[in-house]
Amino acid sequence: MAENSLKNPAVEEDVGIFIDPRKRALVCIALFIAVFGCNFSFRSYSVALPKIVENWTYSANLYSAGNSLMTVAMTIVTLIVVRISAKTGLKKTIIAGLLIVLVCDILTMLAPNIIVFLIIRVFYGVGSGLICGQELSSLNLIWPSADRKKWVGYRGVTYSVTNIIGPTVAGLLVDHFGWRSTFWTIFAFHLAGLAIFAICCPKDTKNRFYKDTPFDSAGCALFILFIAVATLVCTLGNTLGWSSPIIVIGLLIVVSSLVSLLVIENRKGTSALLPMDLYKRNANFTKLFFIAVFGCIVNMAPVNFLSLYLQKIGGTSATASGLPFSLIYLVTLFFTFVISRINGLKPKKVLVFSSFVCMIVIGILAFWLAPTVGEHLTIMNLIAACYGVGNAITTTTIYDAAAEYVDTADIGMATSLVYMGITFGGSVGLAVLQLIMNTVTASTGDLGLGIKGLFWGSFTAAVIMTILTVSLRDKKKAD
Image (cartoon, rainbow, N blue to C red):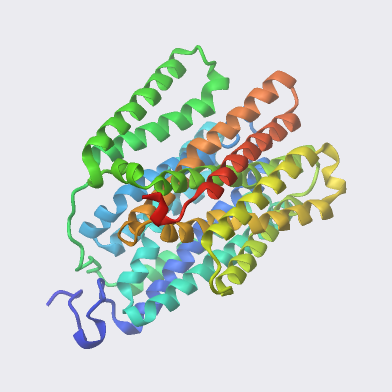
């Protein structure tokens, strides 16, 4: 009998992946440890990066390229990992992802220059995509319905703890033990997760409920081509020159892939990656997608560039540059908890409030940042704490709105589009912010002004996001 057959049909009739109940918790804990390592890497990256690159000859034009390219790689893997895992099983998929990130952890510490570092970061995105693209859905498949909510909650706690302690712990490690200590810490979590998962997880971990459905391969390929090349063009444009044949060809690919994507998706109907008929039928679909895009762009400025400003322009320690992020995520967790406890609160009201807070705080940062910021860290941390209220928009608030402002039958598609919007903002949007910094820095010769310039770009995104959230209409009126 196959190992993944039901051992107790009366209790576990809705379990997609059967694991011995005595080992089930250990398998999920192993997943949480692995995800903790990935998320710690994400949260510590911007804090450690100024120290990582300080002894390399590199162009500031490439500063955010690691995160941009990693996000593109994660996007590509996330779009296809569901089909891969369905055929190979959860165990092989997660182990493959962990092996990739373990190798990348070691290679990162040995990277001799920025180019090798960026290539490794792309492969890290592949491994992280295999892990993070499966861990949440796997909880719904491993546990019976009575236990799922509890374990999804545990997963949320894992993310929240990493978000809160990650930046400050990374700063402490960098200041006292060097930047490589952060990657040794990440390596330890990945190795522990791999060991427990490999031992406790059974061989047969295929989803018994999976049914192969039509896949929009053309739309997926064009979407990936568009975001990948657009990210590279924005990142390398100033470095190579906008008249460079490589950049010109890249721009042509960006335009042609986008046009082709829109034409093909319009013909496919509801089976498309981007369901154009739903966009036409309900304007909220389009608005939610762009709220997600611009909301993520807003978040990219402080997450990726504030540590750089604090360390390189303000002269702070890595620890001091990490503390604002810990406060952002702490307040985000608290605010998200509070709004979840207020009965009858409309998601749109929360969304508008969060958007407005983002707009105000990012505007204050863009105006206030100065070389003397290191002398006013208390004010900096207070501003960061305020931003935490707005940061809820890209964590839970936008997903709540997706469930509220579209028809019930379309909630799944709306949630997917929100995720795609966040992905787009985190790759192409981040590259656009880098482009703004590159352009301002090149014209003024001042990196500090370049960073302030991208914060003004982020402020513009916040204004657009706020306008879109206000314009959301009740789903009955939107049809």
